[in-house]
Image (cartoon, rainbow, N blue to C red; front, top):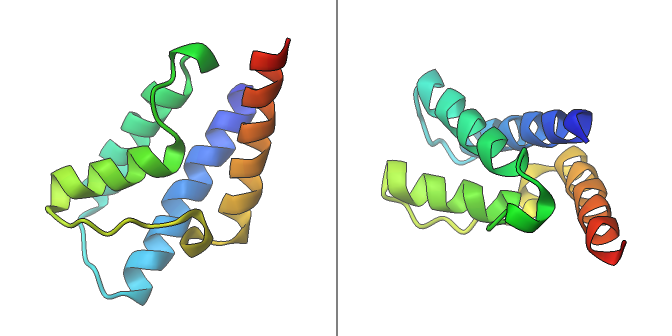
Length: 98
């Protein structure tokens, strides 16, 4: 599962950078590093202890740090993010099914 978390976090950051560039939103590199840490902390927890989805974490972080209520959807972060998110969701579903 560690590889899955790493890939999901990496694709989240990559997709967000693309989204910000496309929408001409500028942030410092530190913004992405802090977001990466926030995502890693939450998504590295056992599934039953996670309180938010990756997209919820992302949107809450943006709202708190940038004072922007963007409501970014998974679709807006690209197909690679979507693939990683689906794999994460499947793993989470398996965890609760077992």
